Image 1 (cartoon, rainbow, N blue to C red):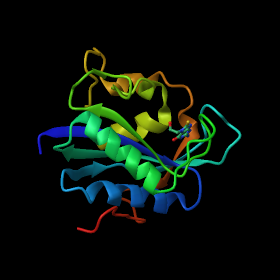
Image 2: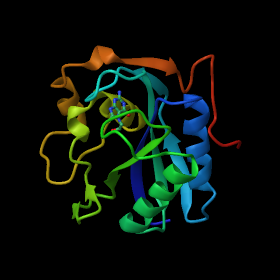
Image 3: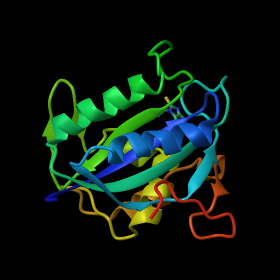
Image 4: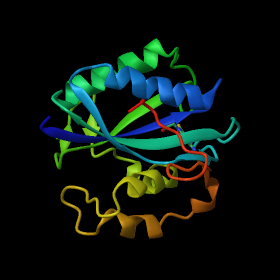
Amino acid sequence: MENTAFIALGSNIGNRYDNLMSAIKHLVDYSQIELVNYSSIYETDPVGYEDQDLFLNMVIEIQTTFSAIELLDVCLKTELELGRKREIKWGPRTIDLDILLYNQENIETEKLIVPHPRMIERAFVMIPLLETNRDISIPEMEKPLAAWLNAIPDKEGVRIWKQKNGEDVFEPIES
Ligand code: GSY
C-alpha cells in the first residue's frame, strides 16, 4: 500500500481502552488499511476544556490505498459508529481520530488540514507519535519532531498507562 499516515486516537468517555481498540479494529476492517505500528497508551490530562475526565491517547501508523480525504471520511464514519456525538467543542468524547500526517504532504482543504495544525503543541500527541518513530519529520519544517517536543511545557500531563512492550502487553489486532 503506497501511502503512510499517522493517526492520533483519544477517548475519555465509557470504557476508554475498548473504544481505542474498537476504533483500530474498525479501521483495519477496511482492506485498504494496514496497521504498521502503534504506540503505548497514555493517560493524559485534558487540554483545552479542563473540566472533564482524563483521556487515554495513542498514535497508530498505517499504510493505506485511501487518499487523505477518503481516510478522513473513514475516520469520521468510525467516530460515528462508535457513538461519538459532536456536542461541546473541546469537550468529552467517546473517540476522536485525527489524521496527523499523510506521507510528506501538505494538505489544506476546507475539511482537512495535514499536518494537523495543533499537533506540535500537544504533548498527548507528540509523545506517542515520537514513540512510533523517533526520526519522524514534518514537511517543510527544518527541525525534527523530537526538537519540538522539548519546547512543549505540559509533558507531565502525559503518563504511560499501558506500555506497548511491557509486562502488560496489548495487541490491537490479533496476529
Ligand atoms: O484533540 C483531541 C481531543 N482532545 C484531547 C485529547 O485527546 N487528549 C487530551 N489530553 N486533551 C484533549 N483535549 C481535546 S479537545
